[in-house]
Length: 368
Image 1: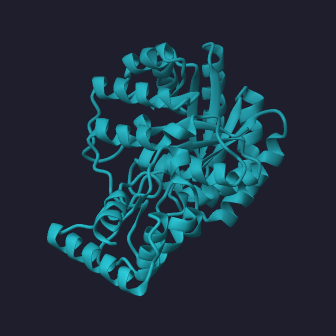
Image 2: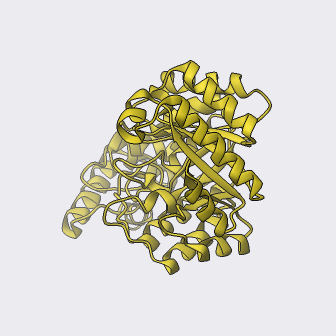
């Protein structure tokens, strides 16, 4: 089964203007633990240790990961907070090697190897994140991956750091790393969402052989954020690759995390937005009264959300006929017209559509 590592707190801390307090972080950890997650990446200890978060995660039975650059001081700072795992990052593309790291590929690879060995010698698991991997040459990634495994890395993460990849290029990149490491290490896909395909890229990575996905609640993270945890979870579950989490808690937990972090949740956010399971269109509502799957890509109740069929200006005769029939009233043309008139007028007077139950009550009580 594909594993899921939540990186909300670590990536969220990189969002401009988002200052996460210690108490907030512990509350987020508790919420994530209730979802049944197994692993969380919590901080970059060299900058902000957040030791209390690691202890809180442990109390909730979560495995913890800390981030470190391929620098001895970073690894030592990570070891100091006593995580279960240190995720060691190193850039791989020529563009970032020149302009971000200022090192040759060989020098970067040596830095990575030394950092992995230092972490392993410190008594924790070490993973390696190959940054900007989708824009790196395949033979370069092969070399990095081989060196990482030889140094003792338990997994290699393919990071689409700039969100430049699409499902095809991500799959090709992941497949190459999977073939290189074989059974010696796991492979994780870490997508960013700059082109709004983070969830699709996560799925492509899994299909190409990745056995783990990094994601954040609501896609929180710098720039356009990361692959949204909730979208990735639903996408994989609906296509036969579910995470080992409590899917029935997915929506309420993700909404709770937004609330705890005081990050507004757009009502149209896929899966967890308040508006995404509301239907008022006459054609849609009429069909969904018969079978909700007619206009739903997935059953929201499976993921802890409720669907709402609304009745108002958009309601048509087909939906009203179904309501009348369900109430045991013959849907004559006159009754359909009267029911539509009452529903439209009531919704107009209120300034908002009626709920399904309100519409059913009106049909039953005011249409003979």
